[in-house]
Length: 347
Image (tube, rainbow, N blue to C red; front, side):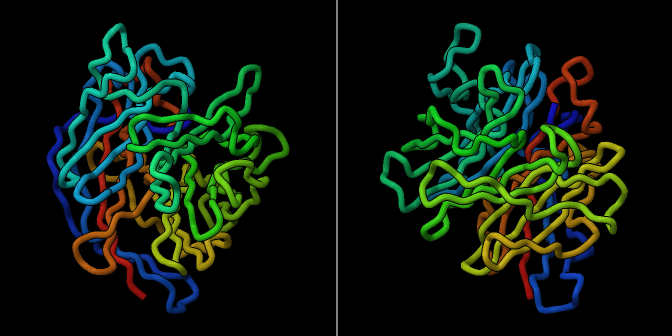
């Protein structure tokens, strides 16, 4: 399974601490300096429903007005592969205390009293398209395996409210990309950040990050590689997911998880001034593994949300507590928790 291991369930209580380090560009220039000033030590949302009894997965969070919205994947004990994915929704008034409302949309074991929006799309991430018609202002990307194909193609969806979705029948990108990809509407272009593989065949070589774009929310160009581990990284490091946010007109930040040989996934950083060409900020991770629910893996979600103080942003993440390859329904139960950290951006 392509992500998240097990969580030790600790209860939904927010705690934070100040990290003693910042991340700055290796070349010493006046590039962004990133400092994590708060981070949860216990999950804000955890697996506690039957459709989550294997695990919960990738997340996206948006704040629209005074309302906070969270979208996440979940899997039950019937999991066979990543096609068996439930797309779920939660809401909050403060970004800390989350509710899983009964949506009445999807029948799970004969009952629609659940927070499931749909089934069969993996790694769904959501963004707000403020230039789109009201009926399409929420947009999402996710991956599916077309019938008879071994690859995962990227599909798109639109919604008026972030809950009721219409998935496009045709893929946005017919290239293998089996993770939580990120899409942004930026000026006159849609930017798509997606997983690629470095080898000539599907699932061959190492996981790397690619970039694609389109003037419309359809027919994206073939992706080009923009970020990969190199000889100065630990041996066999792979960059797992794109996790990209547009901060301003001339600053884009990427928070890819680095898959290590021991199955752990700390978070690294890269930045761009144009949304296309990215450069590493530092060799050491921005976020190391925590001591509780996130002590093995961290997968940052889409969208940086402005904090109360200038130049601060909340980012949400999936935390895990078993190595990557051990996340199997035969080994874990109710794994995965959603945390967050507060990032300060300086120069």
